[in-house]
Length: 124
Image (tube, rainbow, N blue to C red; front, side):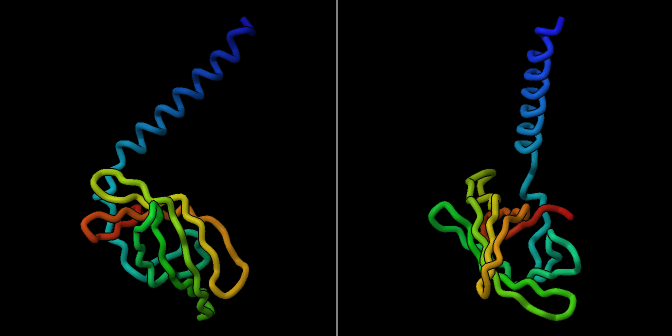
C-alpha cells in the first residue's frame, strides 16, 4: 500500500489549495470597514500608521505613510502593492515597504481594497 502514500499526499495538497482558493473567492471586500487613519501596524508593538492614501497606477498601488512608535518617533516610509482588479474594484496586496530615510525595508501582509474612491481594510 505504500505506493499510494504519495498519491494521498498530492490529493490532500490539491484539496487544501482548492479550499484556500474558494475561501479567497468568497471574501467580500466591500464588507471590509473603511480605512481610517491612523491605524495600528500589522507588526504590533504600539506602532501607529498614518497618512495611508493609496493611489493606483500602472498595475501598482502606492502610498507614502508614517509609522509612529510609542516613544513618539516618526518614520517616513513608502509602500508598493500589486493591484488586482476584482469585485468591481482594486485589491492591493503583496506589499513591499521601504523607509524614505534609511535602508530599512520589508514586506507587509496588510491589504486594502479600493472601489468608488473608498479605501477599505480587512477587519481586525
